[in-house]
Each structure stands twice: as C-alpha cells, then as structure tokens.
Amino acid sequence: QVQLVESGGGLVQPGGSLRLSCAASGSLFSQLTMAWYRQAPGNQRELVAAITSSGGTDYRPAVKGRFTISRDNAKNMAYLQMNSVKPEDTAVYYCNVKGTLFHVSHNYWGQGTQVTVSS
Image (cartoon, rainbow, N blue to C red):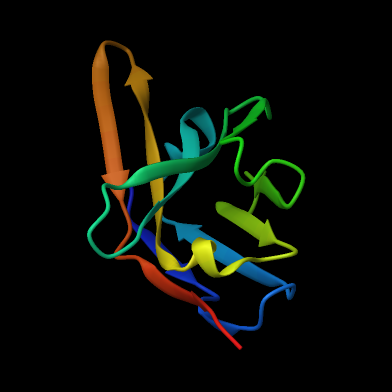
C-alpha cells in the first residue's frame, strides 16, 4: 500500500512559480511510476507529467518547458515545479503512483491540492 499527501498549492499570480510536493508512505514508491494530474471545474482529470522509477519523464504539451517533475526515492518524495504559470493552470492537482509489480497492479491517489493562478 502507498499513501500520498500533496502540499504546496495556493494562489499565485500569472507568470509566477509554485512547487508542489507529494509525500509517499510505504516501500513500493521507488518502484512505481509517479505522475501529477489536474482537474479543473467542469473538466476531466488530465495527466500533467509523469516520471518513471528510473527517472524518465513525460509532459503534456501545454506545460512542457514550464513545469518540471522530479522525485527523490530515498525520501519517498515527488515534486512538480511550476514556472511561468498561466490562469489555465488553475485546477486541483493530484499525485498518483501506479504500476505492476510481480503481477499485482497498483494505483494510488492523493487527496489533491488546489492551485489558483490569478492576479
């Protein structure tokens, strides 16, 4: 089992920066892919960025070059550095950890943290 707790959300002005953190419990975190999703009101939850256990990354085009995903397996932590934020980045951001280990599927979610981009 993996439990996830996000932090770092808040109100930020357009063009500003914010760093989200995801604290994971359990011993499986380092072996699973970690991702950040977001969901704006009236929209479906969408993938923002993902990082594999070995450090490979992927971003949705809208955030590429502005956001950076990273992880520290020794600390069971993952991060999303958000730079040059835009009003359309406003959403609840969720931490997700998933993967298959020894034929067992894992998929865990945090409770979400609100990010609001507004002047």
